[in-house]
Length: 161
Image 1 (cartoon, helix red, strand yellow):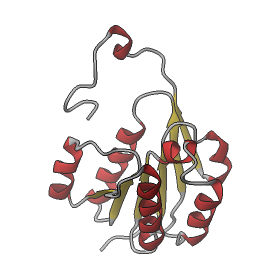
Image 2 (cartoon, rainbow, N blue to C red):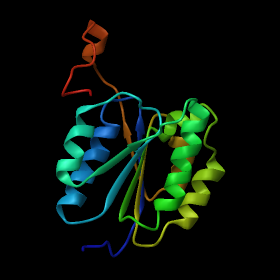
Image 3 (tube, helix red, strand yellow):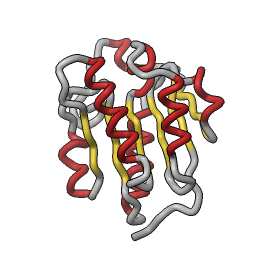
């Protein structure tokens, strides 16, 4: 099995579209090279097409199954702590929302980064993550310039979900 020589911390944040999509693109590439990838999703209860495609590609995507948002965030962080040393790439999707709502703290993220093996890549996505940019090695901010949502076109199957 392949492994990374050096693992970094990446953040995809901003008000623009594409944060989860960028993380999924990285996951696809890493899986293609035989890396063990796990995506943990905080705020998404919606079944999306990537959940159907992921098993065919050898990619694991896990959503919380608890009743309340607080319990879901706690479950995802518990899984993250357990899995960080077991995978090559760990993606915490929609971490920004969990932090905005106070379910995950900066200290929680710092603790997870401290646990991260040197050969594990950690990807953090979500709006509002610039306050923790100093914890990352790479930060990409998606900036909204124009969006068809403003014209009334809602999320489309296969494109936004």
